[in-house]
Length: 81
Image (cartoon, rainbow, N blue to C red; front, side, top):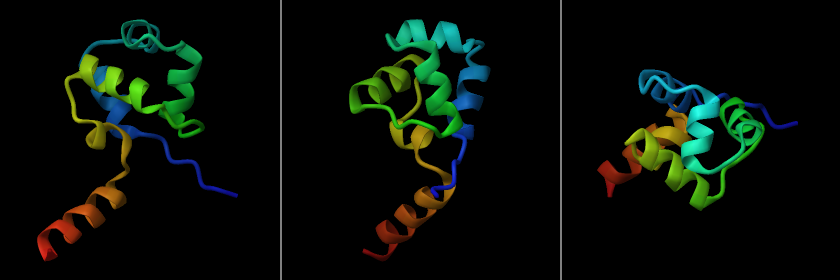
């Protein structure tokens, strides 16, 4: 069974922006239930939804939706190339 990893960067960015799940979901044109599932790691957003969320929060998609391990691996590959 796949381990669920909450998207802490997404949650923190939403909270720092002073938005509730309802408010972010409305601005990003997705349901609050879907946003909740994305934040908890139960669902993966479509590219369009990820873009709209990142635009509202003014943060890059990779920062919001990729966990720290994936980001570190990507940085290592970029530096070694």
